[in-house]
Image: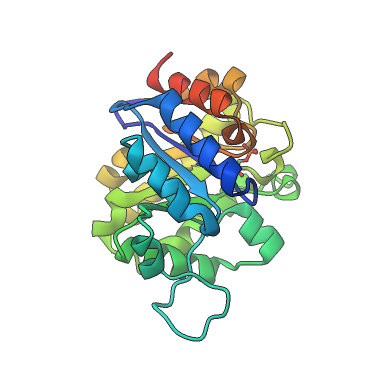
Length: 257
Ligand code: PGA
């Protein structure tokens, strides 16, 4: 981790219910307190955004409210979808795009992910764009190729002024929810390539200032080793974010102990 301010996101996925979401938000916010050193967000199921937003606001962390997805069109006949305007209306500040579960389970394409990413950035959100290779792609030696392809698509038509609100999450698909983590060295090497690719598209300054976070079975026990790598600027945490104590310990690791 370098001069870039670390970012830690908790991705709750399709978990909790109203009571559990409220309790988890409260315990998480109280465990963490105000942390100027680390930027935080929790990515909450749509139906609990308002409730969790209230809890975070009471705890003095209103800026930590995040959504797991967004639809790129402003309004209209898109049954089941949620627009940028609706998210803003619920107090959301950060949005995930391109999560591997949306790419590989729901079937989102690079093109749809680009449209979502651009719409959310244009609407003023902080966007965490997730990229990463499957096990098959990794074993075929295609890790860098896949990351480059997913980034290239997202950077097509990208406005330079959006850059400061973009965070890249490198999440090797084989490490998500499996208990298998990339070694700190492997993750660092992928992050280095990702930073170089950002440089090719957005220039050297953007490459240096853009935060690249790691996701995939980050736990309190491995967080410090990952976050101590030069190009790893925090984490996107799935399973461990559902336990407030574990998440708080990961945030402490990002603070430097
Ligand atoms: P995990 O999920 O920490 O449970 O592996 C990470 C993610 O999907 O963002």
